[in-house]
Image (cartoon, rainbow, N blue to C red; front, side, top):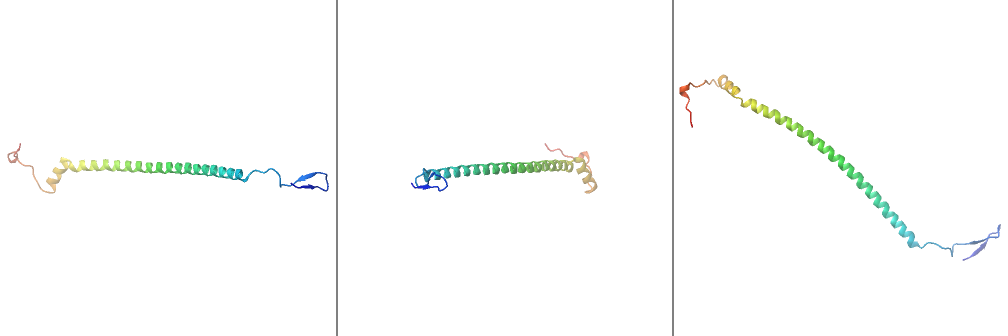
Length: 114
């Protein structure tokens, strides 16, 4: 330690040669601890934001799938109605008589098979 005299005052100032300082290991440990905590906080925040974005994205996909399901259900109903209309006996009989020129058989022409 060295002593120096301040010219304007009668005080003795101590220079840093012998002053109490923290060991560099403690400072390094605090820096590492702070860095680890900061990385953990940043990583957790990024994971939270990513998971929220995924939830929203999956919600949109579910909404689109439900719209498609509704559309397919409506198309299915229309197609079933069209099938029922095309299979109706009245329509088939009308086509047979008008377009194919068929006639109804006489009762003696009908043979019942059991």
